[in-house]
Structure formats: C-alpha cells, structure tokens
Amino acid sequence: MSDERERTVERAAVDEATRAADDEATRDLAPARSSAEDVDAAAESFLALESRFQGTGSDTVRGRAVNVETVPASEVPGDYPVRVDTPAALALELAVDAADGRRVVAYFAWDEGRTDDRLSRLLALHGIPAHRFGDLHGESILLRAEDGYYLPCVPEESARGSARGVYGVGLGLAVNLLSLGLLAGGFGSVLSSAVVLVAVFAVNLLLLPASTYLDGWYLRTQTDWGQGPAFWALLAALPGLNVASSLAYLYYRQRARPLAGE
Image (tube, rainbow, N blue to C red; front, side, top):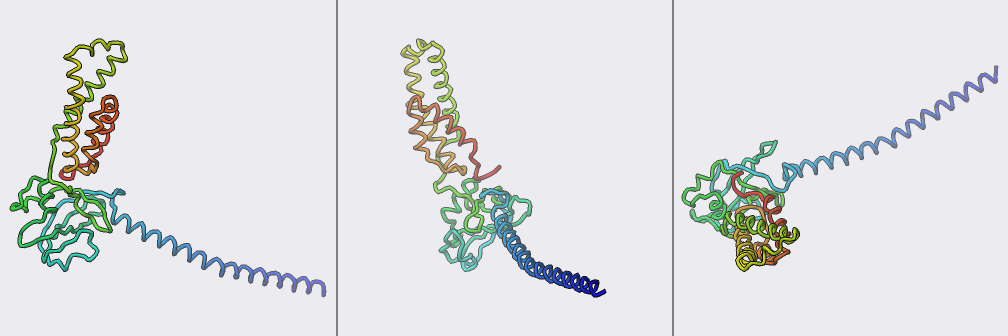
C-alpha cells in the first residue's frame, strides 16, 4: 500500500516538473515570437516606404499634370532635391500612373511670372510656349525618384539634334554589313571600284558618325538616354569597329524612354 502511495507521489512530482518546464519554455518562446513579429513589421514598413517612392518597381514612373498653382517658397520642403531660391514657387501636381493612384507635387522656381530654365525646358519637351502654360494639363511626364520625391525628368540642355539621324545610322550600318558580306563571300572585287570605295568611305567617315551625333543629341535632350553623343559618333567613324558600335547604339536607343508623351 505504501509502495502505491510512493508511486503516486512520484508521478505527481514528475507531472509538476513537466508543467513547470512547459511554462518556462512558453515564457522563453514568447519574447522570441514577439521579436520576430517586430522584425517582420519593421521590414514591412520599409517595403511600404519603398513601394511609395518606386511604385512600379522602377526608379521612373509616368505622371499626368492635373493641377498647378503658385505658392510661397516657404511651402517647398526643406529637403526638396531641387533648390528654389525665388520668393514664390510653382507647384505642379501630377497623378502618378500607378496602381494606388497617388498624386505628387513638383516644384519649380517662379519669379513674377517668368519661368526658370528647368521649367522652360520641360515646356519645350511638350512643344508648349511659356505663355500657354495651361496646355500642359493632362500631358504625360516621365518622373524619377530622388531622395523620397518624384521629380520631372528634364534634360540639362535645350533640344538639339534630329530624330531623322537614326535613318542615317541604319543606312550606314546596312552598307557596312553588305560590304562585310561581300568580303566574306569572296566578292571583294565588287568593292575595288573607285566609285564603290568612295561611297563606302563617305558612309564611314561622314554619314554614319554625323547621323549618330545628330540622333544622339536628339536622344540626350528628348529621352532618358543619358549617354554621350560625341562618344558614339567617334566609334561610328572607326571602320570595322563601327559595325559592332552601331548595333550596340541601336540596342540602347530602343531602350530609351521619351520624357514626354507615351
């Protein structure tokens, strides 16, 4: 009988020890779960902030001008990436083409109705004279994320070059590819005539570099293509190498996004 009581006491002691161990484990795990939840919440807050500034997963988005007004320069945020050193500022409100449909404000210097160079270049992109600023309403503008703000992508230079230059690039590349094909096919004698040689040299030394330069400046001042027109024109003037450079140039060209329209 005493043995039975001893076993009962032992089982009770084991059960009590087990419950104590479970309680201790629960207390140890609770802070860990809380810490993990805190980390997840912090990560989500950073992702939410990132999506707010990036929207589509890119550092550029498009927005449409929906409203404009002049405001005191003091209303421009102190950390705004573009300096506004005039008494007033022009606040351009844009509806971002993103799923959340948010709106952002871009600020420009404004001095007694005179537009600054940055605003003038933006208007020129859309073919709008300064005295008809209202025509900007509804226009699509490429925006880039910078320091937590969306800024209109505005070229550093006024419009230059010509979009027709790309036709010269295509023609020059075609002539060079044809010449290489004739040489590879054993028809090099076709290129030996004076007329053909002059034409090939004219294409390589004049047409191709000049066309690349003109088209490059068009891209530089009308799209987000931020490369050097003179660099690509120099490569286009080097026979042999200019075949590869022209192909690379056209590849990068087709990836450029227009600053206006689209």
